[in-house]
Length: 493
Picture 1 (cartoon, rainbow, N blue to C red):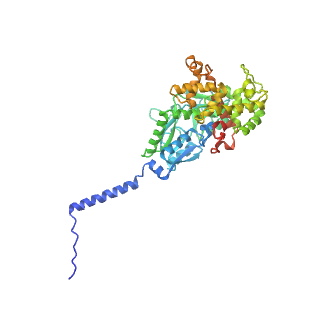
Picture 2: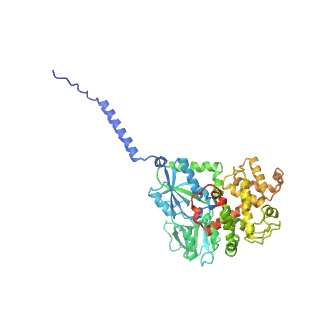
Picture 3: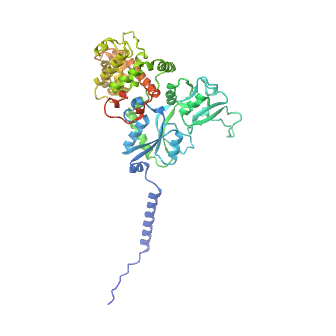
């Protein structure tokens, strides 16, 4: 007997329709997964790396805070963003904002940073979160034919050549006006020539060579360049502020932008961003042109005489000689015979009592003064509570050197008693000046002090140290942090 075969019953029309719908949905989902990539943050987490293009220049650096391997404000923030995403940070350093723009458009990096301002509307890029606001300045070179101070943008001499950052949006005052029919009125309204240049350093060079008459730069760029080049002058400060931003590719997904904004909002919310800005950039607005010119003269006519002493003390005690030199300049302008009205003397301006404690018989002996002053700095640092982190510990060390450790601790106590952080310089420096007010100093152990002086003193030394690091760079300035010890603190750079 032949076996019988049961035939599978034919699908009903309804089942055929259901199967067809299922197949269509399955194909649609597959196409969606294939054609629509995962959110950017998921892609970053999958490859375990946040890729950033970063404009490499000295203008955003604060070597004073380069004790953790990240020498710029934005790199510190990017480190925190990578940590938030649970990935490592891969930084591709470039020379110009235009290089950042190209890498973003090509999809080779996730984010662009490095003192970037918003690009033009046709850049194909999206403006990310704002880090801080800066002013824009039209700078000129002293002695140039057309460059000079301006009362208004209308005073820009006809035919002037103005260097501007390549790829950045121009302020309205530099846009070419249009006729009512929408066409450029070249014949009558083109009083100056706009020349896009890759960066502020090249604009400064072009100003010095007379190739341009004015340069458009941010206030941060101007202040940093002007510290080494007093011939660079501010011709006009544009009204309104310009944001420093991060840039992203102009694509539909905004997950990375949302994470970046959330990070910065959190940092702003509890004051951490303010402290970071002060840590990295707080010294840039310290000295006027007269101070800058005086410092330059002293570098030329006095520093070389004592440099060996600063280097020897730095080698002996594990400190950066430029830091010791900055303290000495603030104290005496590198004058070994300096005497203050209160009787302090010498390069490091030691009191008689401090010199006796340090075993220094002659305060006007340059070698003894530098050696003793350096040891006294380290004593102040060691006597501060271990809870104070860097770089705040360095700033409070300088304040204690100036006004005394007791008064610094009084300001810390007032800060703690009034809801501020006694271990953060950005809070303590707000309380130091109040030691001159009876309402506050009567609550303290050590009483009245001219508390505004250590605040100014510390800010000045930060500024002088920054200038010396620019003028006398050393191979280790950008190195990763060395072995534990004094050399991984700002005081010991």
